[in-house]
Amino acid sequence: MFNKKNKDKDMKIMEGDVGFAEDSFASMKQAIGAEEHYFGDFIISRKKEDFESYNHMRKIRSNLQNNVLKTLNIKLKNQGWCKMKHICGVAMHVQELCARTSNFKLLEISNLFAEIHKLLYLEYLNILGFTEKNISNKSGA
Image 1 (cartoon, helix red, strand yellow):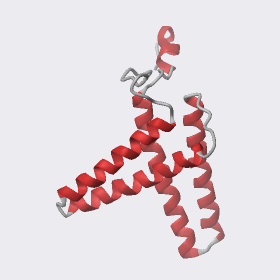
Image 2 (tube, rainbow, N blue to C red):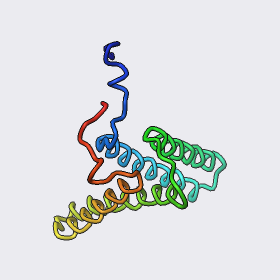
Image 3 (tube, helix red, strand yellow):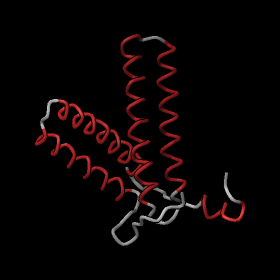
């Protein structure tokens, strides 16, 4: 439990909190992956229940994304919201490709996928407004 004296400090997201950004990036990737699996179930079955489950998962992913932005007090402009979602989706699949190639000990190709993943993460940080000047390893956690 939180100490009452430090409760506000413990719950505050620090400006440029890279730990929060890392966690939100990983969460978004997983939510998008789950959404795709629910969509796959619907594609296979064409059942109303699977369609409803897919839409429920989409709402969860959208809610997660909106809450990340709200927590960081970010209002994205133009296509920013969708770009954020798609960057996380691509990153999820690149991570899967890296895992698959590593199973076959294809280190060179895995390294290429890892570099693409890193570039996607840096673009995610950019969309969230993180820069070299305001990024911090300090955390409110």
